[in-house]
Amino acid sequence: MPGGSATSSQSKIQPLPHAVAAHVRAGDALHVVCGHTRWTAAANEVVRQWWGRNPGFELSMLSLSSLGVLWFRGGLVAKVVTGYSGDVFPNFTPNPVFSAAYLSGEVEVEHWSFLAFAQRLEAAARGLPAVTTASIEGSSMAANPGYERVDSPFGPVGLLAAYQPDVALLHAPIADRDGNLAFHPPVLEGLWGALAARRGVVATVERIVEDIRPWSHLVRVPAHRVLSVSECPMGAHPGGLFGTFTPAAPYGEDIQFWSEARAASRGERLNEWIREWVLDLGDHDAYLRKLGPERLARLRARAEIDSWRQDEAAHPPDLTATPNDWERAAVFGAREVAERIAAVGADAVLAGAGVANLAAWAGVRAARASGSACVLTAELGLWGYEPTPADPFVFNHRAFPSSVMLGDSSDVLGTIVGGPGTTTIGCLGAAIVDEFGNIDSTVVPGRAFLVGSGGGNDVASSAAEVVIVTTLTPRRTVAEVPYVTSPGGRVSRLVTDLATFALDDGRFVLRALPHDVDIEQVRSLVAWDLRVARQVETLPPVRSDEVALLRRWDPQGFFLRA
Image 1 (cartoon, rainbow, N blue to C red):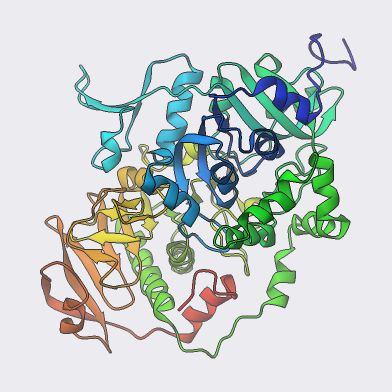
Image 2 (spheres, one colour; image 1 turned 90 degrees about the horizontal axis):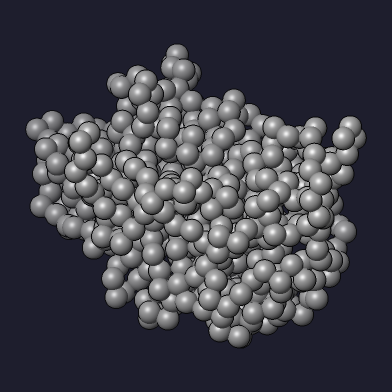
């Protein structure tokens, strides 16, 4: 009917507490959807209703950033299926709550790469028992029960078993009364989990509209898959909402809140913090009142396209300090990335998190200044984006408007990066790296839990080649990693603050040194028998303009920390 709804089903609108009470059951496999909106008011409501009741949920969530501790401390989860368990803001670090629960066995965990995680949901959404993948093989995740390498008439293939949650929780910009949901790109894991959920979706939205057809090109989840819709303005907080594609007003990430959650998870007042921000608040409206109008206005302002200028003015970089170890690593890494772009004619560089991200940014900028058409891409679904000053995060919403394409991880990690006709260099960090280029960012069994794969395994499995950028320390460089998160078969370089190595015949060879470092110093810092090239190059000293560029992106030293 003109001017009316496209369907005629009963309204799905419910108050959020009623929706969670009606549709979430003990023992459920709950999937929290991660797009560029990385949290949902429904996740907070589940914590309120099930705190201390031991429901034995299986939580599937692509990235458990700091707020994931709510589910652990409240005794809500028996098992986690994920691609990342750690803090994101103010930097990427292991979280002690996750680490203690996983190492003790209190919570079972199943690690996957970002792409493999999404592909398993995709298989379930398509009604398939399994889906092929180019990721996982050669890593320790290949031992997961949901992965098999099999022979087929077309050659050996990697297979991922379908994963089907019971209920999906997500936040969308808008919905109509029937429950059709529209989304702003980029959408990271996509909407496969919502489409796969056995019973359906508990959705929160910024706004409910009478007729969603003006935005039908953005509708990704149809009404019949939706159990309920609850209007919760700023329901992705402390995550943000990008874009003015619908009537939903955008807002930025609340980095201060994320940082406070991270700090609380490391102290004795975690329960007090959870009570203050979740348990003692009756509903989402009370949560917004506690945030207050001034804070909410600041987050709205943060979504403005040039809001980075305020942060740049508030945090001018210190251009006088001597370059530290991470800055040296980033500068040497950027130079190597630029050289490899020219050597292989790269179309794109996919940046990992942290200092590797900054090295990729600087390397691509240098390559483009020399005539290359190479662009930056990111696993969130960004292609051809430009970084902004004063915001060094790889998922920085302020970079989204500069992208020439906004998609999801399947577009970037599953298609373009490893697809025909595209030459991509991956620039990755490494918590632990061995002589063969294998990276461990997941676990040292029995000793420490790190964070997980993220998109690292997918990049290492599919990129034309990989440059690792990190610092050279005995803890970081081991003879053999205890857990292979990302296999080293496509690694070409290991770039550190004190040396650059090339992978030759499957093992690293010392290739270049800064002028103030000697071979014996490097030998004392690696756990393998050092192989040395016949001609060891001398790396030119770090220049002030190279450091200034990095510090302009990261003036507060979130990643460029000594």
